[in-house]
Amino acid sequence: MNTNSKLIAFEQKMKSTLQSLVQDLSSIRTGRAHVSMLDLIRAEVYGQKMPLNQLANISTPESQMLTVQVWDANNVKFVEKAIRESDLNVNPAVEGQIIRVPVPKLSEERRKELIKIVKNQSEKIKISIRNIRRDGMDALKSFLKDKNITEDENKKLSDELQKITDKFIIEIDKKIADKEQEILKV
Image (tube, rainbow, N blue to C red):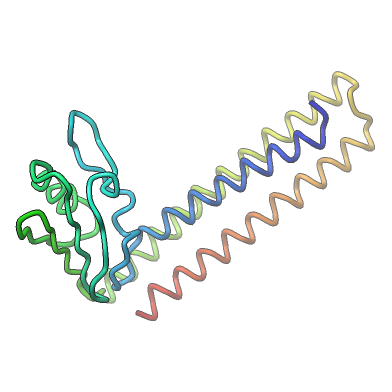
């Protein structure tokens, strides 16, 4: 494998790490109902934990309400329990096979708590990005040691890897700032 394809592979890892942050951020509620709020919740059914979107239709009929229409009536209590025990701090109400999830407005205290959670997630993702960069640097050192690349190529590729890393760190900071603004303005 040549060094450019290695850099591309490390960049792809960073991109997928950033995507996981985007997915995690979309599940953090901001006081408005959004179907992605339930993305990370898994219900224990059929002997395994399954995502809610594989067990039910989720919709937002109002800005402060989610409805979860469970396909199998036997799973309603498991889905309801998973939603109730999640860290969303919501109180679902069951009506037959439909679970109504009112999304209360956020208190100032909860907003600050959510911002701390968002910042904590961003730090974890930044650490992951830096670990990917470290792995890339180690791979370049190995190439240099094995004389697959020259000192100049190593320097050039190291600089390129650092630029890629910086680009992703800036993107993470932008996503976090956007999410903080979303939390504060609702």
